[in-house]
Length: 253
Image (cartoon, rainbow, N blue to C red; front, top):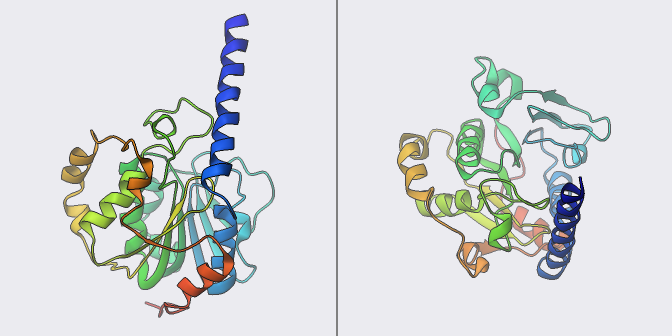
């Protein structure tokens, strides 16, 4: 029991250090603030969230938005408007009536599910199929600040997994996409638009891409993983200026 208590204290000490580093490295508004600004600016007709967890980001949905969340084990901290599917994203995307469920095209999506790059990539592929070119997909956890929080298996309270690889893959494999990094606490986010719902290159080469990226490790200078992206500040003015460059409302399919 003493060893367990000591391990817990050590884990909590690491977490406090991680939180202090997040505050230092990612100043200003957090990712939920940015997501809230996006909801308020775009006023999406519909919204899809992969990885609901406590429901804090799902609660940002506007009353007029038709919202769907997917999480096999949601742990909602408050009542939420919208429909929650208690299943994995792979099961959800395999539903034969999927397009009717989400009322495609989906105008805004947030991917914050299983923290492995291959699952996040698969989620992106599936979400893009339901989108319009002017839809917006938001990826979370694209900028881990140290290797210990970016492991494939979880060893700390603060954990991003290797989702950063998904962002790098999109940049390398899909130059047609518009990719913009926002340095929002605690681990950055990537805004993706100029989508192509019939583009299949990622799906066609999925196994090859995963095999190539699986052994790659986080650079010692972790800022390198986001250095090549366009960048928008995590302020409401900057985010709204970014959004103003794109159509507010995709055309219905």
